[in-house]
Picture 1 (cartoon, helix red, strand yellow):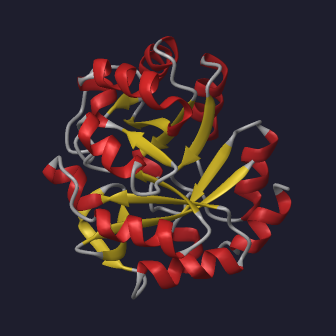
Picture 2 (cartoon, one colour):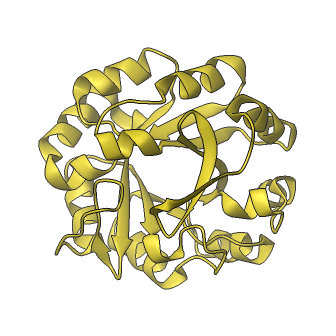
Picture 3 (tube, rainbow, N blue to C red):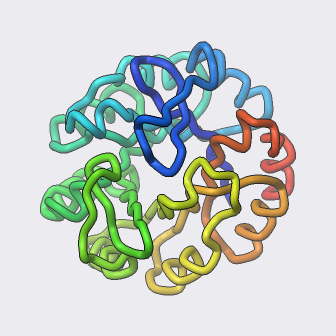
Length: 237
């Protein structure tokens, strides 16, 4: 299982949210690049980065931060937030980003996802964020009546190979991942599933690994010190 340490960016700075509420944003580090270098020292090969401003404004806002990390570290960078067009995807691909995460457009513009997968294949990842099992979009500010596994099946049908699943009610809470829903989506589709939201400690990492998940995103647990990145990577080798 791959461990993805996370850096969410707002106003150019690393921040964390509680349950996706933008009013709860608080800075967790001085500098994204320095933080990324610390992840490298702990053995990370990937980093998960989100443009929180972009997700609200529906356009690229903090792209310079992500490109700097991609160019100045050996990390493979996956980026989400505010990616709405093929031009956005082209921009990131041409600037060294390894994977592009499509979130809201998976529900609202599946034709774009299909086109992106045709053009860029495995570089395209779909992020499915859900509250009480139903998909939420636009930086988690809009709900829907679409069940999370139904959207996952639609994405599988158009060729998506990797899905990041986030239970919004768990995000930033250090209350443990939603194992039940993660197992449900992992069983529903053949896609690789990355767990996001609620990871607290090494026991959570082991539980996700034992359920056959492809990856786990770790954010608040790393910044609060309840999980050591080196240990998480170690048990997944």
